[in-house]
Image (cartoon, rainbow, N blue to C red; front, side):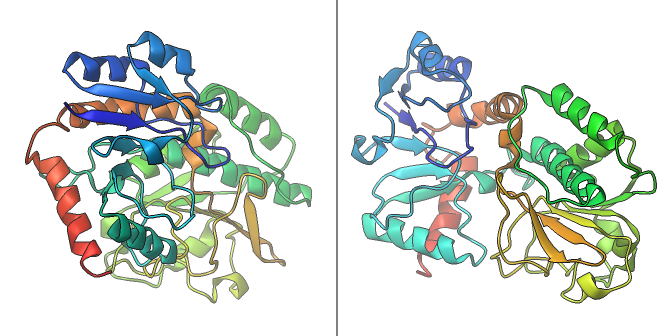
Length: 351
């Protein structure tokens, strides 16, 4: 019997989940066992999982789960250096040269476990089977607008917090925009045809911010990209790789520019492939904007768990996309799961 163990997230401001009670009930109906860690912060109450037939276990008890349990979470594990003997389904951020990723792989090697990275669960065409991308783009653009409003008020951007739903978020931003003069602001979105880019573009459209949408055709020449400097907002919405050009070079802050806010929604600052080369660390809910130049101001917004601003919508969307793949977890040799395992094997061999 396949045993799926939904862990409680241990990161601040992370209230999303990749499995709803309805999804858990569907898995149980196929013969799987589903254990759910108790959590006071998860956007869906633990009681709803109990009603769906799940076994409820103590929060953060996954290290003591049975050896054959598959541990399922979203964000990173506590960085305590302990060996990892289980199969873990999560966003590992370990395959693009990240320093923290190397440490994570070392822990898997020490424990004999396996990382099945959610980012690399793909179908036969290479498309991800599930992604938070739309809501990451939507929320990332929203926080970037908050940063711009703060600039126009001459003050630092204050902390951000979750919203009940997307309409509440849009209404709050519209009210704040009405108090400042941002009438000339435009946005350039790279990756406009993807999930993330669509989310960012939709948020801008809802607020009346004109959008220039770019995708592979517009960036194929490899740069430089002076058009970015002509827009108040630049949103990086692509998954970078070895062939990705530099969109924002180190000399950008001192250039003549209309650019005021960079929303690096892809947010991979410690990757060797980072195409936004003016910052080196993620920003936070408490301090969303990193000021990289003062006059004229240039802020970088690079929060790496943006969909948590809209936790219920983003959780239900992602969980619905992922459920068919979770149903296939017991299938030996299932191509979606096997590709992810093979990729782990390639990278762990290099550790």
